[in-house]
Length: 314
Image (cartoon, rainbow, N blue to C red; front, side):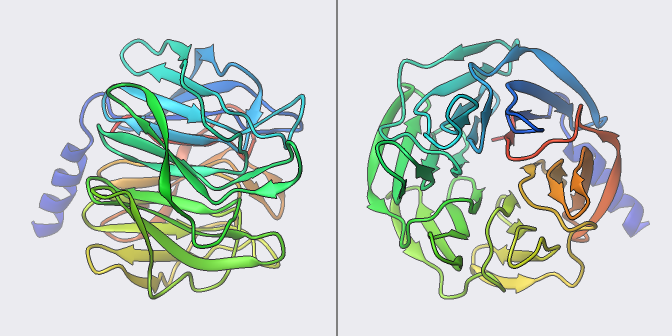
């Protein structure tokens, strides 16, 4: 009876209208496609709305219940330049617009996190304009005004191709990545109330890049997959509020990097990406009750990687 009660509570946790969005990415070329996953039924659809340009390696943040924003990335016309644009998708009618506000610095191979209904953060990354350089800056989109600002705090190490997640209302976390010469293992934390940055005493179990993250706010965040000297299945778990880092005994079902992620109240999602066998369209779900992954019966529209996603739950 206890197990039945837990499962019933979990099923109830997926509120009607809970939806995940994934945009951009790359097959053999960049794409501007936006897809929408119903988190209560695992049914997926391709939207009529598209990103402004065919874009890969971009960031995605969610204004809870209102909008999804994609920031930065690289366009097909110049893969490594680093864009400054914010594209916005209204979750009310799935219409897309482009903000007047822009990032202060163009960046691709970027990432970030969202503080629910307050602000979304885009950080670090790479640009080749005007010269090849890694970023260490953090930019903040205030949702109420859709204005962009640059934090005084900067990353402990300039990196690109890192993982990130949010403990909404409290802090955003990012980890690892590539510093131009080696894979990194540090975990940095931005406290939302002060926009100040600190580095956790414990890092990833192994330095890696092109990994991703998702979280169950208030409980734990997870960094998974990525590349060390090969593509890996490793999942590291950061428990809240102690910020204790542990490694799960069972990781991803298939070694994967450069995938899309987002989370609901009950599951974390790994969508698409690149495996040792090539690009994949598979969707895997991690049950937050058991920290184990299972293959979904649904796939994304086409095998692709290096895009970005978020759920409308923020």
